[in-house]
Amino acid sequence: KNQVEQSPQSLIILEGKNCTLQCNYTVSPFSNLRWYKQDTGRGPVSLTIMTFSENTKSNGRYTATLDADTKQSSLHITASQLSDSASYICVVSDRGSTLGRLYFGRGTQLTVWP
Amino acid sequence: DAGVTQSPTHLIKTRGQQVTLRCSPKSGHDTVSWYQQALGQGPQFIFQYYEEEERQRGNFPDRFSGHQFPNYSSELNVNALLLGDSALYLCASSPRDRNVGEQYFGPGTRLTVT
Image (tube, rainbow over all chains, first blue to last red; front, side):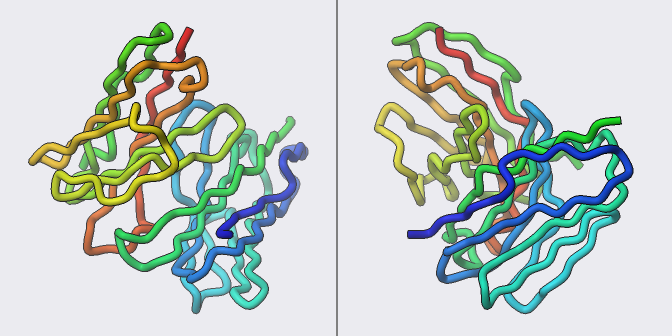
């Protein structure tokens, strides 16, 4: 069964600290993995996208890693800011075309305190 | 260049009523997907449209139907509303000749059924 599991479910950190979010998937075949940031009540916004051959992708203070062998990904946030408070969703695509399906994790709810 | 737009932003309906949600894709995109996101959950795939036809469908009852217009915009219709239909409804668009993982999400429509 194609699944995407994220951990932790929620996380609270102090402003300025770093954190790492985890994503494990069983989706097969695998096309790509994307991390989204979703503010409460808003649509998800893409942070990074990685294909099978990529193992690291950065976007400012966000760095995603991918281990296609173990089917694990992580999102590392550096020097957190209050605006980083949001849900972070891991999404895996099973095919490199529009006919592919997207499999969503439940998200990690990150709260950054001042 | 406008991104994905959705209307209305919020909607309150009564059980048994019918609702229509609207989505305009990002410029250059011809494929539209709809998702339902319950509070605290990841988005659940409802269906996908391109060339004005439903191409894929998730595990949703026939009460959920859709339409795509020649200008690629789309509607989601839900009949006989249930309390459990209360959710954030997300529309995502992508160009058909590109990777499905490159979907762009709209801001969503918050539907409350009372």
